[in-house]
Length: 318
Image (cartoon, helix red, strand yellow):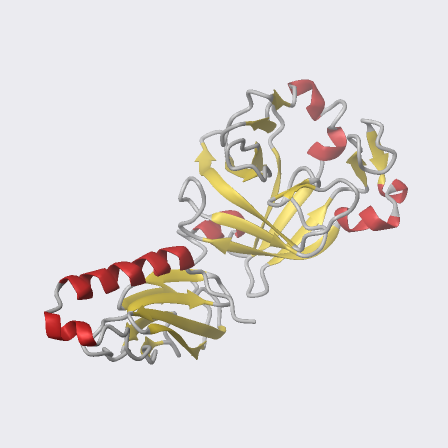
């Protein structure tokens, strides 16, 4: 099934608006034919690729219809979820591989799409130095743990807000020590390898294992909850998106998560993992003068747009 990251409602309004403009400039004779005309025939050109890690996309869709309707182009890279809008677009690829470029065009007469593949022959050796991906995964791999401090886990109605609850500092070596010893390792590779290691234990809260608000061992997880234990998954960094426009971090695979296993983009799931991806907004990332990097992630697990529930996690890498 084709998937496009396109605001279809907006497209509908644009089509209506374009029709209104055409009608407002019609002479009486023109009103004899107010059909929208033929749909566009999407086409585009790819410049670059091969030994280059960048490509330029050029919309070559011809104008259609009596009034020479111009198409509105939307671009998507299927494998990386990069998106753009406009008659030309530029994309950079970090890793060698073959990527699917999709163009969706909208005009008076309707919608059409086209796709092409482009091959990148080599990795971008500079990408780990000044990118979101490089900050998270380093140039080979990078391991993160929850910051050993109060409010490393917190929840409130806004991102980076702990007004409802935050862990006390005593949890670091006390009640939640089995959470604070977990490691999250991201590898700088084309597969986007993500390894979660819970060190053989977990904090039960009221839904994991014995559900008795204490540390427990993996053997006490029922079979349906075993995917929430240690495992190897995948991840993806989506730049320029998220509530803070600093990017998003998506973990991929049944059971993949950061922080609380129950918290997902589709609400809380306590019985067993049911989603294959969870996307976290990058709220902040910086190097602390004390000698470690800080990554702050947020996720809204509310399904009510008027009542958001934002969990914020603060991690460190040494």
